[in-house]
Length: 151
Image (cartoon, rainbow, N blue to C red):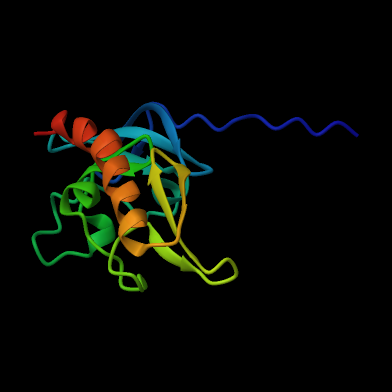
């Protein structure tokens, strides 16, 4: 039996205050859509978040105390502009530096960076400082020019 799957097209549909303008590049492995909010802001939202009612606007209605996931963060090709700009360190980070962790089985520090939905390994290092330098160099190369577009 031949099961052909027809790709869902949400272009032109409305979800709360969002009008779907067209497809966007996937966020990770998830299909995403470029949407315009009634307030005029454009955001990229995953299919599931639109169809489940999880995301109904760019976040303009939430105010400063609204939930973080609905604040209308700006995603470009799977990368959140606001998260890059803030250079936050996640709570589960044990080294204090994003993208640098201890690779116990090898007894080395490993550096990596995620950008536009792809993880890039930057190498493993005996010294923590060398792993940090590799990560910072990659941030400068990838993040800095990307963020200049949104200033």
